[in-house]
Image (cartoon, rainbow, N blue to C red; front, top):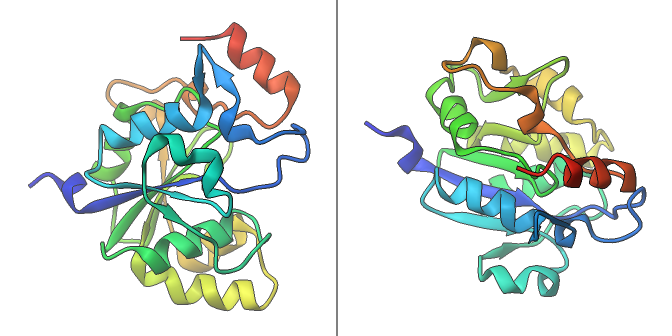
Length: 196
């Protein structure tokens, strides 16, 4: 059975983009907005894709469902919470809008390796919690931590339990550059020069 058919995709579009100075989702790499690039990769893997954002007008051109945050200005954990709160699926695929080189191959490999723990995410020299699979059972933990002011995604993962997938262990291996994220003007310039 293809496990991806039971997974729902959510793209995090929120965030105040303080380092960038403008909404990251609309910045272009190779002529396409970042959010469109990520949405295209996710849509090749799962049957339904939604956007998590409090600024729906910015992304209306994608014609995708929009989910607002429940806990505002609380970072990626609030976006994850909103997605878990909105889904009817047992598992969601969460991806940040600032991953211009995200590939369907990596996402499929994460789904295949989604293990017995409630979260599965890639690992390079660090963990990548905003490109990951999460079980809907984590909703209450996310709610509890947000209400307590605990916003760290890594802290959340430690509390939840997770499976880390090393990119080098995949077949074929996945280059860590697929998880390049764009947080600053310098990151954007580097992504544009590395266009693919």
